[in-house]
Amino acid sequence: MLIYYLLILILVIFDQLSKFWVVSNLDLHVTYPMVDSVLSLFYLHNDGAAWGILSGQMWLFYLITVAVLVVLVYLLHHDGRQHPLAALSFALIIAGAIGNFIDRLRLGYVVDMFKLEFIDFPIFNLADTFLTIGVILLIIYTLFIAEDKQ
Image (cartoon, rainbow, N blue to C red; front, side, top):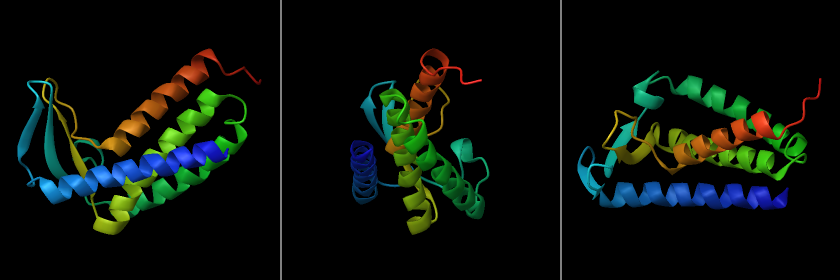
């Protein structure tokens, strides 16, 4: 389990360093193209969820995040011992949740910076990427690897 906690720590550090760099080097609400018509940097303060859903409801995000983290740490220790893919998926989800939780506690909003130019998609950050990859891996684990325990 120690390796997964180290992974969580490293991912949270990368997330926070990327956000620090964005805040220090980019102007708010200005687009900086990275890959033409594909990906840009766009510094944004997000006080809600994706697409600004539940904007300003920080108390709800605090409550949900703490509850989800408790469940995910339990699952990491319980189901994560069953298979490395389960453990990896829980570690990624935990790292993403902690990365955004730190922003909400420290700043009152989440720093987002990656903008997909080819689709109407919420602007996101590394923590969101970790969450998304973790959920995808958890779905793969659940559908194709986990044994039916009924």
